[in-house]
Image (cartoon, rainbow, N blue to C red):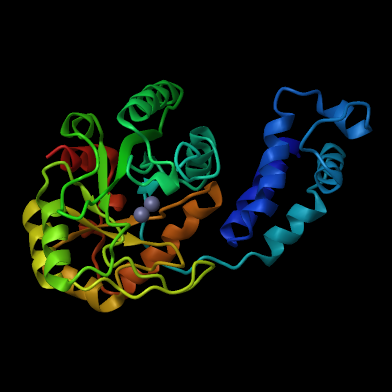
Length: 327
Ligand SMILES: [Zn+2]
Ligand SMILES: [Zn+2]
């Protein structure tokens, strides 16, 4: 087995289980350190490489000896199976890279999405005011667009869609210039601050974002957290019927954020959005390659809520998706 692939796959399974990023980094870091290095010399101990420690060295040696490293085999054996569903998920419209608060380069996110059978994935790093998440200024976003265009030249049946997860500001406007938003395939608009705003203000704020002609997806609409290292957080209060009616009117997809911590929106609101005639986008909100498979959780929830596949934009083929996104 290829040693770099083994290390990256270990990273994948650790990320998928939401292991600490410290642990995951050891394997992702070793994989990156080995790229372009004579691996046999590292394995023999002839060459010392920064970032390759005892555990990772053992993985490298076992891979070079032709077997699946035992560390990897254990992770594969003990992985929780994905929730079952029968949707054919072609894409994912909400993912992050190390350009904002994700943990890996864009290339690794893209190759993992391909490995999982996706045909497109939107790169939606954070917007400037989310400084805590290293949000991209217009200048950095412009630079990222060039990187994405170059990467896309190397794919046959896969595409990275340009995008942003743009903060919804207090007044409902979006945290990036209209000129920049115009350049993007996908605009996921999400609220990340002042989630406890009074109901009326929060309703106006979300309606403002949905009415912005740049918005394609309304991200993790309630902001709730149901489990995980960040603890729990209650839903924001807003007039969901009004917000979903506006989403249906504007053709904005309501995101089903599949992260185990979020599972947003909750079931009763999924049903309400379905009845309102909304479109949906089942997204991973991945911050690492191993999170890209979370969409299975969202898909199982969508199916349980009775949402038909044709209302889920991430089951659409790329052409149809792009027609809708550029509407
Ligand atoms: Zn977000
Ligand atoms: Zn996000």
